[in-house]
Every structure is written in structure tokens, then in C-alpha cells.
Length: 146
Image (spheres, rainbow, N blue to C red):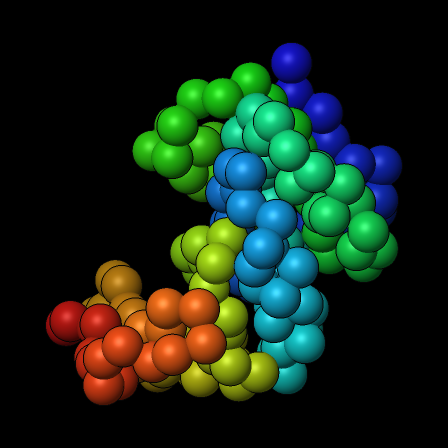
């Protein structure tokens, strides 16, 4: 069974942010908030709960924003859930988001600007800071390739 929220959705979104979620209450709220706080606003936010057995769906439902498209399904695993998110996406660009990622406020704006000005590029990434709990465990590292 797939359940979608009743929130109105924009068909003109330039970016589709896809966030699969499974049993992740500790960081999920911060991950969602970091996307909702983006300076770039022309996006839809597809969040798919992949059959969580904890309060993950309830955390997702505390966020009310017309850009959010919330779906629930029986557990299918990460790859199948990502493929479902891509199928649901309506944007020109797809931004991948993990349930425990935090995006800087200008992430989408910078990525859209780059992709718009480099049509030869099919995929980009960003720098990352890797944290374990409250401690950074590695230096920032590039995750993009051309």
C-alpha cells in the first residue's frame, strides 16, 4: 500500500528532492528541516517512508509544507525506494537526500546554478563533513566528479 499526503503539490518544481526514510527518528527531523530551509525554493520534496516500524512516519507528518509529497510503502529496501522516488519526481533535476544528511542552506541554489551553466554535466555532488554523533571523524572531502 502506498499512501500520499493530501498536501497540494506544485507541478512547476525545477528540482525534485528525494528522501527515502526507514527507522531513523534520531536525525530525520533535522534532515527535513535542512531542505525546508533552503534559499532555493522551486522544488518538490518527495519523502518515502519505507515501512518503518518506529515513529518515523509521525516525525515526517509533523512537517507541513506544500512542497512535501509524503508516501508510505511496505519495506522494499533503499534501491527500490530510490527508484520509486525517481518515478514520482517531476522536476528537471533530482537531488538525493539521505535520512541522516543535513544540507547547507544554499545547497540547492548552488547545484541548480552549476547545472544550468554546465549542460554537459549530468551529475554533481558537494563537499561533505562526516560526523559520528557529536564528533567530526574526518576532514571535509569532495564527493563530486565530472
